[in-house]
Amino acid sequence: MVAVAPIRSELTRDQQIEHVLNRLAYGPRPGDDERVRAMGVERWIALQLSPDRLDDRTTDSIVSSYSALGTPTSELTAMFREVRVARRDSMRLPDTRRTLQLSLAQVSSAKLARAVTSERQLYEQMVDFWENHFSVFAGKGQTRLFIPAYDRDVIRPYALGKFRDLLGAVAKSPAMLFYLDNAQSAADSVHRTLSSRRLREAQPAGSRPLSPGLIVPPGGVRPPRGLNENYARELMELHTLGVDGGYTQRDVIEVARALTGWSIDPREGAFVFRPAIHDAEEKTVLGSRLSALGGIEDGEQVLDILARHPSTARHITRKLVVRFVSDSPPPALVDRCAAVFSRSDGDIRETLRCVITSPEFFSKAAYRAKVKTPLELVASALRATGASVDNTPRGAQIVARLGQPIFGRQTPDGWPDRADDWVNAGAMVNRVNFGLALASARVPGVIVGNVDPAIGASLSTPEFQRR
Image 1 (spheres, rainbow, N blue to C red):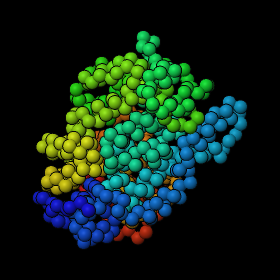
Image 2: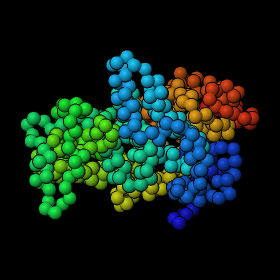
Image 3: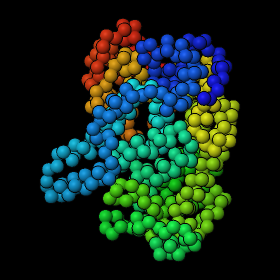
Image 4: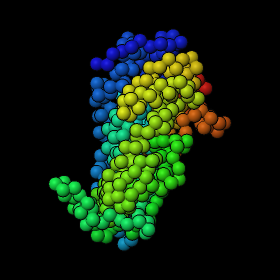
């Protein structure tokens, strides 16, 4: 068990309880204040940082009711091909189309349900943080086929683990490879490619032979279009180093070259490395040399360099501080916790612990200083009223109408996390109307019991918009 250090805070104990429930959770449910007071804020935070120790069977049962949520990507891609053929031949496949639509809709619906019901509140906050940090747009082509696995198999297993593991899972995810076009990125004509034959020749003596699955399958794959820099640029600017992280356009090109051949098996909807389109020549990334004939190791080495770069430690830590502490992150806190990130080899849990147990987190300046995003607003209102949502898309559609469709951000920078981006006259009217409708049990898809009049009245106030 991790030792629980006493909190240093300018806030009263009641304010500390309110603060953690609004900032580290999706708002308090009836009775949560008393539960946190009984166990202590320090103990509550320690448990939230170890979500496996929290019994979440109720939420697991709710999520299991989403029939299409666990559909394997290979089945979704097969259904997608069937629909394309049926459309070409003027056939009707209503059940198949419905499953494709449901699989994405249920990811969004389950995300809201987890935010409302889960005992692992900080974990759900971190899943949302990473899905926004590594943002993909479900509305771009086939990306929607890969969203269920992106949430289930890529983000959730690594949300509190090592950043390098999470970065690698994202880099090999079909959702990201398709969304940012790396699946079609191939060596330019001026560079030699690493054919499967030459790759075998380059293998060290005694190493295990390559899997036949690494060979480009005949048919079903678009011809490569040359080098694509989209993912390489966002990998450095958004995912790791940050816009001022010290890289150049030459580094973008070199990273893109290193990631050629990182693609998608169109049948399985899974990651595949294609040696025949991989740039086989030497590369230099941020001053580090990548030897010729590196194969898939080129990309792995790039991810190692980026994950352990000091600029990445600062960029990730700063975003965590903005999310959980303040729109204007205290520089000393960023420096202190970025050092934890570096010393722990990118341990997300320990970096987060540094942020959320800090005096800056528990300061008067941080108290009620953040404005809720639409997802946070809807989830917190449902929790405050003890409401539940059905397993239809209607709950997630409320979030979308308030301006934040889940997996609906078209640009790769993710939804903004600052007050100025969410507070305007039109948005506030919509938020107030939602609060009034929920208090009077007039929100479709939401089951509300007897709402405490004081809580119902608070839902449409400016104070409830803050966390």
